[in-house]
Length: 315
Image (tube, helix red, strand yellow):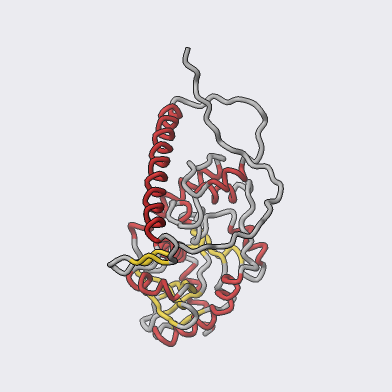
């Protein structure tokens, strides 16, 4: 095993450098904040379903604190099950899994120093080729989707690990619902890697230049956190905002019309159900119209900012 560890170190040294181990989590978090990690690249590209580029930029520039997942139960179970899943992968794949603390850690690319990766494990084929292993846990409901194609943000995560570590392949080992295991072997994809390098460089420049990305859907809370208060002053909005203003008015009118149409359709179904509990369609669809007791609740006092539009008076 010692010879294999030394061989892996030599292999990795051609493409990356280990900048810290995982033993000191605070140091790992600090060093990771100086680069774009493999789990963050899909965020920077706008391909992550839960985080946006603006949110990541705000965290990297220390305007907003990153979410603390240390006590997240799903994360805890994932960490607990990681060795079990790794062993299952080794048994099923025939590849050797390497998790020696002398090689596991945070790696930074030599050619693209703004990119980093923390592979869960390294793997070695019977032919002596090195790869990276990403370990995941998810709901059993996701099994068919993953078997057809793993989520895009996971693929980008693995491809960045492949890029940083200089391997030609990697694998994702997944435990679905705590009882169904599968793994997906993935080869190096140079087109994806090209987009990672380009987008990673651009995003890192935005961080260095203090230049925020444009907001996306899902950035409401980030905007509120970035600008929690106002100073009473006015700012001139550029000419582009005239078109945005017109678009916003049109979209809100469309939304109001859609809400009305939805309400009419729902009211017709409610009327047809009447005092019954269920309404059944011929295709098997069932609507329920139940009486639900609403419990009183109170909202804690807080300050929020609301965007309102004031039109221009004619004459």
